[in-house]
Image (cartoon, rainbow, N blue to C red; front, side, top):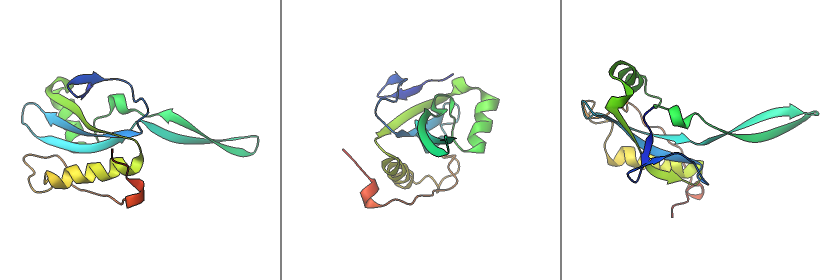
Amino acid sequence: MTDWIYNGEPYYEPGEYYGFVYIIENLLSGRKYIGKKFFWSIKRKQVNKKRKSYKVESDWKEYWSSSDELKTDVENLGRENFRRTIIHLCPNKGTANYLEAKEQFTRSVLENKELWYNSWISVKVMRSHVRLS
């Protein structure tokens, strides 16, 4: 498995963060993908006729984006030919949504298919959801 890198070092523990914004780079072609991933998800189950919620760790350590094209390249070319870098650690879902879209728009990911795997941008964020340090 290719580790996630943050500030030049392998990143293994989510700590107090909710999620992150990342960039995955194809080291052979230079093509990239910007996305977000959450460290946690909320699961619900019924116990004694009451719904209980609990937090579980996501599959973030093995995650390779939602892009089928990128995942196909990873499978065909090998994980060792890709670098996964965390560019923002986020305290909540709203901040992750905002920073992902900001990075995608700033880098013009939809304008050059040869440089970017991204094929769409979707975001709905309210100012009150965003906490930037």
